[in-house]
Length: 351
Image 1 (cartoon, rainbow, N blue to C red):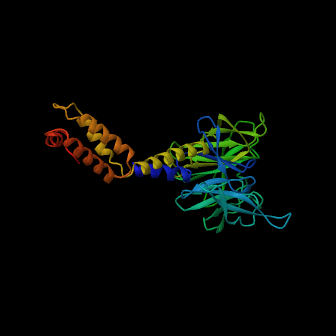
Image 2 (cartoon, helix red, strand yellow; image 1 turned 90 degrees about the vertical axis):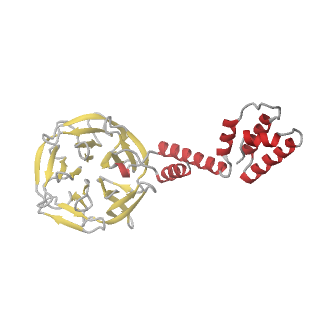
Image 3 (cartoon, rainbow, N blue to C red; image 1 turned 30 degrees about the vertical axis):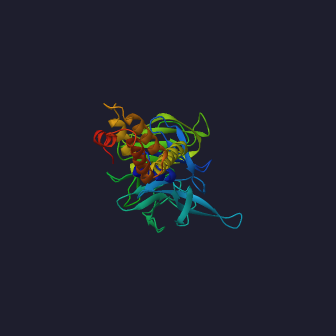
């Protein structure tokens, strides 16, 4: 009981964990959201802890990373870096500059090699970049030729997916050569300049989240994408503006939304308080006496004695006081009723 209460309390304080799913980052609110993979609805998790523009989002080694964090330099200049986001604290910590690029709009993670991938869309031929969590950046190949505003990596099959907003299509990018290969068009007729990709490793589903569409220019939608043809199918609306960073989160790292975390905190806190209140109270003795409570064959007032004992257990904070009160009551009634003591102790054993 105390261990479960403590775990629940610490879980709630830390932000908790939930089932695997999608995490989105809105560059309009600079907040993180849990995205329902079935209907696309966004639920607030909390602040991202920084000012982001054209963000890429991905999990690597159980940690959340985001590209294009804007850091204010002496006005009007900005420093743009990739950052590590704490889901517990709601803070962003820069890990390194983006090899001179101000526009890494997509981000994907390779768990096997421990690398983050992005495409520098503001550099010549838009080359593929690989960044270690330490911030060291390597250029792969001569260029992809696509902007890669959305990116995701299939670790099992070692396939890097990327979007191209110029032809609204899905591509694969070779992580050894940096060359891009077109799969096919999304077929949606939407602007994917603000979009995110994420790959569900469990169910083998590629998700596209469009931060802008032609019907509602600010509210984005979630789509599933056929990795064989590139065709996208609508799942539902986010209900939130510009969710253009998208990442798939594993079971052991998923956060709980603010309402759920508050509920977990309340349950843990109440349970912990109850445990502390009950410490030192011989609850086992209370149940033992109640189970043994029965009419006596002689008129020794045993029922009254046992009822009194139960009340003293529930009102007493120390087992020592409980035992003392019971023995005093036994002695008092034993002086009034012959053979009481022997009969009572045989009929209702003491602790």
